[in-house]
Length: 294
Image (cartoon, rainbow, N blue to C red; front, side, top):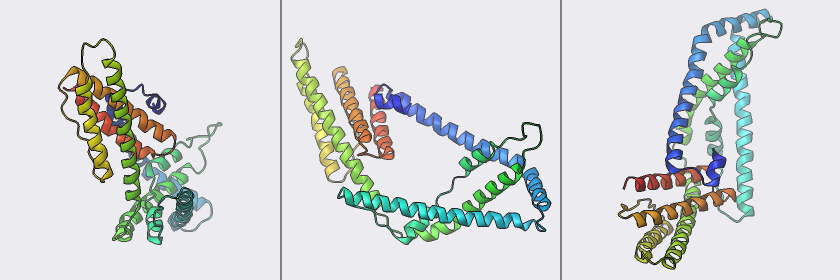
């Protein structure tokens, strides 16, 4: 579906409805995973404790100690990964002479603690087969699920308690960088829309001559130029005036298509992140859907 989007063949209504459907599907599947865990948890705990005792450990607390040790190791790995990632971002910013985000210890700790991925972990661990090829019970399955569930619960509890304390008063510079990137992308899209409108007006006025597109095209061009000025001032403007005529609607659709194509081009060149691209595309899609109601 992303491939079809990049080709520009997907309608705005399809993208908006598809996002709603995928959000619903994701919410439902996440719920199913935890419902399945809840139904199996009593037997999983009993089987896990039995595995521990049969392995020669005298206390069931070995299970909970193992969960804590794995979680600590996971935190260490996450901390290293976040630090390396931020260093790469800083190196890239220095190479391309752009503003790099500030990297402090609190930011590293917050990013480390925020890495909770419960549903993905459970979905992976619960794919372990119930039995072997010879029909025997799969060894250690309940123990593995119990350890995974325990680590998820511990990570949720620790993050809920510590993140508010770590994030209190923390100043982040990355949103400003993202806003600048988004504003520049919107300006480029607006300029592409202006070029498309001018080209269409010139082509249609040189055609059969039955309709003069110049006045209508000029109104849309003024609208986009005003948007560009607002973006340059750091203001956001995504409002679209009510459409009044069929010809104006046609020019709007041409402008939206040009905006969308420009945004996709920026994404292909890695000049725009996927998150920002999706945000801008949603604004364009909603504007086009609003156009269809008039």
